[in-house]
Length: 304
Ligand SMILES: *[C@@H]1O[C@H](CO)[C@@H](O)[C@H](O)[C@H]1NC(C)=O
Ligand SMILES: *[C@@H]1O[C@H](CO)[C@@H](O)[C@H](O)[C@H]1NC(C)=O
Ligand SMILES: *[C@@H]1O[C@H](CO)[C@@H](O)[C@H](O)[C@H]1NC(C)=O
Ligand SMILES: *[C@@H]1O[C@H](CO)[C@@H](O)[C@H](O)[C@H]1NC(C)=O
Image (tube, rainbow, N blue to C red):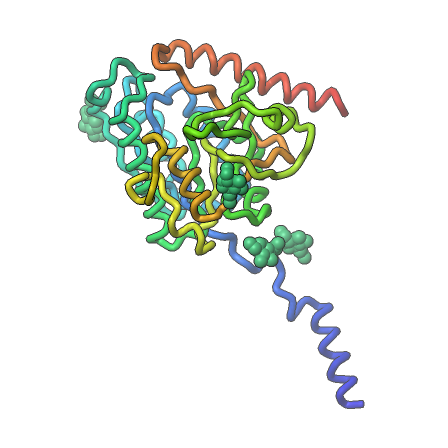
């Protein structure tokens, strides 16, 4: 009798949520967002505005920002934004170099020399180790020409419960931030699974050989400990000196699958410039992409 009463009392307490840990009482995971910026003065206003609109507690986010070798006023724009916003974030680790304009040996701004790859590899590796060292739960590797139009992106990606996950990003063409195939030399290979993912014919998160530009890494998973952007850290590496390819192969070697999610419209990405291209081409591309975003936005209204 007494025991039943006790149980009843217990159940009532549970019903009253006394024993239930509600979602609201648990703090969100901590995230380091790594942002590399070079010649992004034209994309930064959109990038930063959308980033700011992400529905995720900013006091659980640490920003890790590096910017150098700019021929435009990227750093100035970044600083204007930071002066207004920096206090909302948990912390900011930032190094900007406003003196350097172009790396040694580079012919022009879109020339990807080996030195440039090494530079980016070192920066990404530094961000990865920074996240590990400060015990961040997640590292979000985000490029400054990605436009996350879906404010729930971070929350949704975390809810996928995958070690490595990227939101599928649209461009103004067939380009996106994943590969559906990889050649034996570890380069891009077009396969028949690419387009159905892009066109969202099958919806969900699926394993692919490459994700980049916006990658969420769950650092709480032990098997991320050997992920790296630097091929010197990998045994028997015979791929190119390339940050994203090394990372994808390191993940594979650690048995960590890469996932691309197209279950929502998450956002957009700029197509990388070809080596002969100038910034003018990127300006034009940004206009095209903005039209694409507007068009999609409009379509989503018309459907209702
Ligand atoms: C708590 O969060 C989980 C996952 O985000 C969700 O599935 C669940 O419905 C939430 N529970 C409550 C009581 O809000
Ligand atoms: C770089 O920034 C420093 C400090 O903000 C400033 O004094 C200097 O004039 C800037 N140099 C250039 C080339 O913009
Ligand atoms: C998340 O994934 C892990 C395995 O990686 C699993 O043990 C766990 O139950 C999953 N959690 C949820 C909420 O799905
Ligand atoms: C590693 O790569 C092989 C060959 O491409 C593939 O079959 C396998 O699924 C990959 N494993 C992971 C965990 O990504």
